[in-house]
View (cartoon, rainbow, N blue to C red):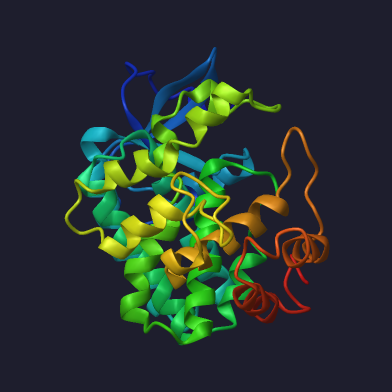
Length: 336
């Protein structure tokens, strides 16, 4: 619970749809002319309290007060989401263009913003506004990775080790994009289209019952069949967005296929899988193995790679696994 110094002056509002706005995306005194809310834990969800009105500024003092009380995320109403995302695109562009800002800080802003966007997109996958904003963030990320390849290790060092659907999506997008650029099979421009497929590869899970997606233990055979529908669900959801590239749709639909035909949902073999899909498979498996789950501890990156090169040798493209080793190297947090 937040101290009275943070919440007392403000009023509770009626519940509705809110979008997370990480503090990293809200520089002080930067003209964020939209309402900002605190989200307080409440029963099975949150209650929202107005923190800043649209006609006031988020000052350095207010922002510092939030940080001192452990607040890392504020929220915006759905009605203000468009204004907020335009603000984010503008301010992030300024941050990335600044020579005074370190790559670590730039990476942190991109990571937290992408996480918040993916979280909102899983709640409203059919929103053109959210898809368009994701595309802007992907463009920023790909451009930075292409301009300075060492940024990949910086971004990987920020990865959360506790698994969540949203952080996993961002991790796969970062790793997959780095692998594509390292293979020299794509320019930065074409890699942006593929990166949307990496970022939204699991979007179909938004249509799988939540109790199955969040189940902490092993799934029953029936639950497995429901989960295995998510690639088709995801491709179906994204087909309605004209800006999603066909190759990105292919990634979403085929990211659980295996080279030996043992994957799902169509049991495709190697010759029916694109390079981009095989890249997503490798990034997806690596991040899943090296993340903590309720029912299993995270593997060390070295052990995960060994697993991918032995037990999964017939399922994963080994050339791409070798590229992954090269990309992470000895100095990355999940070093191999």
